[in-house]
Length: 254
Image (cartoon, rainbow, N blue to C red; front, side, top):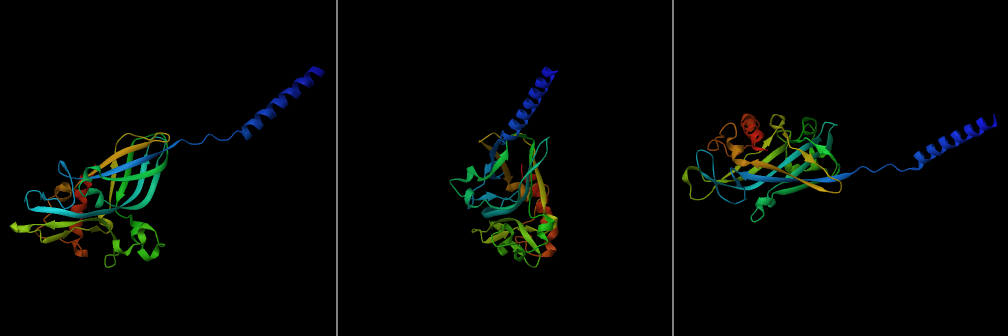
């Protein structure tokens, strides 16, 4: 009988010891790494440089870009184990990063502290999602990405989603005196993208992911945009033109 009591005491003591060890052992920290997205502008099969001449699709007029910027939203990594949203909204200006001699390097956009594992795609939107676009810069605190009135159309009640600007020589002009500003905005111009590539985030490592935007396809990806007719998009009645360009943008990003 005495031996049974001793045995029971030892079992109880061992159980308490195990519980104590579990309680005192710290959790193993999650392994995390960084994702470096390199946004690279192209014009057809060559890197795009600001202030360098290119030929407009089909009509072949000479043009140059002086600016390109856009809102990027809902940046999400997807995997079979679940999705991880990395960023709700941000604003990227690719102009300086595509001015010679660094044009081929693109704009590097780093996102840190991502759970280290394999992902199947990166999803994002170009533009401001409808719920956020319904608000105005004054509705956001100072310093917020959407607090800038410079990127907002008051008359449209919309942010400027995608902002390419430059000059084009129309009708054989000797100088690029015709400026273009093909600004996309309004809910109808918002587009979602999915980069279906295997993306492996490693512990304490930096994973590079290249995303190309072919601005030649922006003019002629699905439908040739008539830049002779409209070089400036600033009015509500131009929504159909914006939709044409937004659909072109859909196939220009890869």
